Length: 400
Image (tube, rainbow, N blue to C red; front, top):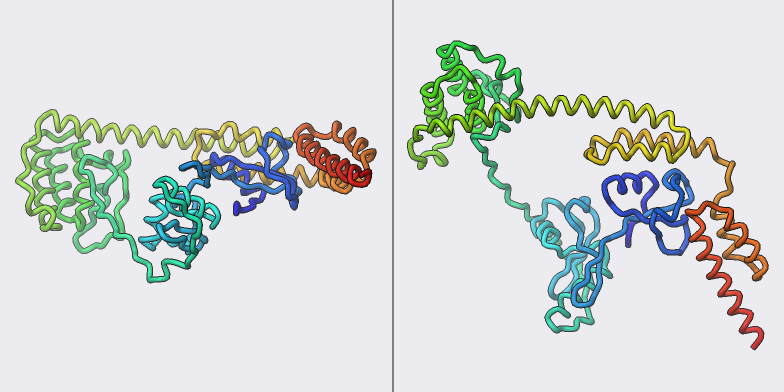
């Protein structure tokens, strides 16, 4: 079953790129597209929402697209499609078999679509599957997925920095993941002093990540000659062999780097310094625009004016967008509270349509529908036509 969402959840899902459907709360009519409803739909209490699930067709059988890991939460009920049955279980991101089943596209959120998917698999190979058993599966202890060994690219700056190499008697809890302009600025200009400082830091490293992280830093230094950089490279190779003999013992002696290779490494290091600077400038621009949008959201006079502000955030991440979404929700609730009682709620006329005693009453309601918001008119007209058909059918039965 497709879960029902609140206005806030639906709005966040829409901003995350999901296709959201809507209907009047508590009704049995089908969900419809948002363009059939007014702009203030997310702030009104009389509506409910759901996410339109993507459908697949295989061998002429249609079923919902299998669940993906980012759609699931730990403890959520799922149904695993197996060759001989359907396994009912709960999602566990540490359970190897469950995670592989989800990742490979064999998990559904409901039993009906799980059965349809299994039938589609069978029909693909010329078999008609009619009787499908549902079992409670994966009751064994979770099989944790093996951890991948983390590798570090010596050219990538996303390693440890100068500050990662502490004194031999000091233990560092963790290395920073990037070096900044300040790290390079702290390096001395005298080549002898630079080499002495880097030598001390290499000797003080307690992890291979910290050693590898020093390489791009001294390559980015503009005061070292090629021979100096080669000397420091040999020191790092020796330190890597000391820290992890199993991994580095079979490596051949480091070859002399060519001038072109040294230039490439230096260009990449300098480029990252520039990228960090540009990232800082982008963050300042984001904060400036966010503050402006938050102010405009707080002062919005109309719901449409508040929701229109999201048009400025199309290139933002979900984390960047969240403060503005919260401000828009707050303002929509304020506007809804202010306007409470000033307009008739749609469920009143819908109830009148569904309980109309005769066609004359429906004719009066049809006139009233024409004065309602264009976004809600299709839904009301559909209900009116349904009730008219029921009354005409009852009249035909009495006449006969």
